[in-house]
Image (cartoon, rainbow, N blue to C red; front, side):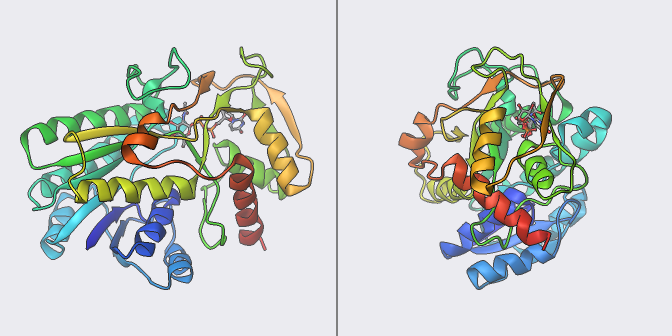
Length: 337
Ligand code: UD1
């Protein structure tokens, strides 16, 4: 069965390609290499023994998307990762984000709705909840005004899919990720941030290896036990497996609604200081850090209620924070060696 994975050479995409191939799916990766590298194909091959089919396509080119579906008319499902994801950059250059994240989604859906099997998995984010009133966050928590153009593209994306599914063949699952971290345990694939990392874990591993002087902890005056902000950090391999399960749910017509939404997190919140302590334990070294001002746009806490994902989707995160951090560290050591 042929599955299209857009952004399949990126961080979450590449791990999902591995899990799909492990389950026997034939994967076609579309990626424009804007934030990824062809070497990822070799990493996937070393893990699974198979290189996926690869097409270097920019999904902002409508005719390229149309031609792709003429060539691969028998696709059974699409997992759509290809998107820009840097919050700060989206504030600086909103049109880039609207063009990349929205146009490509529209062009894809225009073709997918015509397929016999219009099955579509969408990468969404817990950012749609903003600062939720109640923890842990259920899927019924209200979607709040986005804090950035990036966040807005995820909300608009969910709305576009919902509108299209009402009037077409389209069936879709929206997966709202909490904070994906880590790397494949083989250290053959992992996260490759361009430039200075904006996210916590790559900044920690780059500091530990000496690429950065010290980590800045953004705020220790939050109303939390140790004053630092709380997030739900989920191992990228667990996250990848959820995509395969969601895809199988659509392929087997097990979905209860045309568009279903699931939170993907561990259900446990960890503070920035807890992440640092856990990292120090697994890497057996002390991390240099300083406390600085809060970062604008950060919420105090966000962690998932995973009941719906556990019971309805039938998926549960397996890895601990320590395991996820150990895999991120192993990956950092490998790519710098
Ligand atoms: C952010 C985005 C989210 C996006 C995700 C992945 C926001 C509000 N959310 O999540 O939409 O899907 O990235 O790209 O921007 N921290 C530090 N020092 C650092 C970096 C981070 O203390 O150098 C802290 C942050 O303040 C936060 C936590 O670590 O409390 C996690 O930050 P980060 O990894 O950037 O993820 P989010 O901001 O939660």
